[in-house]
Length: 307
Image (cartoon, rainbow, N blue to C red):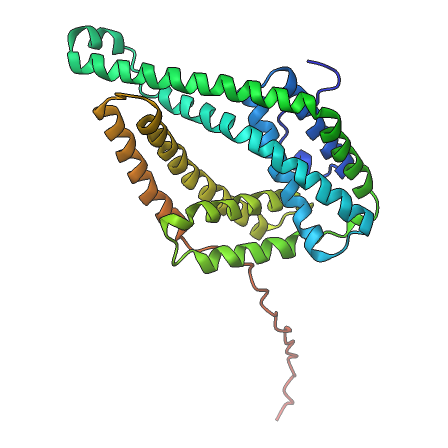
């Protein structure tokens, strides 16, 4: 590992005490690592770190605590981060689809294909789909590396300038708890009437809530519960979206993908959709109201006078 590359995975507890300068240095290291080798782990880490930083900056932007120079630096980096995420999106989606497709291969698939024509067609459909996904992954990876290398100095300079600017007084007055409370209230209001068309936006809110909870320096019981709820929503909706994307890719890009395989993908995506809706409609936890403690009355025992 290069000395300039920071660790790609760090637990949330260790990230809580990091300053903005260190966070953006880590982000720059991930960008540089992806230009050398856009592996699945590096692409996923860069995408997650970009979303995490955007979620942490959002309360500061809306609260108005940033100075004018810092606001310009934030807007500049957010534009860069959006371009980076657009480059990473097709690579991440393809990697997830390839991981899902691995579950369709049983140890005796080749032997079964030699004995049954239906099993042979099923195996050929899986191979054709996997080849198309790998071709897409290779083309998307080359495109990402080419663009990142061409704009590497501009990308890293915007991040490092913002990290230095936020490590002063601006970054110390961010009320992440108020932003997390507003976001959880928004989730709670949208959950009862949630439809499949709104699941993606609902998941984006939950993901933002998860990253806001990670930015809390001293999380309490409610913060941890909100973090767990947002993770459950993100996981349930994400599984549905990944399977639906794989079914859509097989239907549109692979000729003769196999009716059995296409139907199986569609049925699994439909089942996961119902599970995601059920998970998202669960009650959203609110902050525990502090009950006012009544003062303890002290009774004094009075001695009776003798009659």
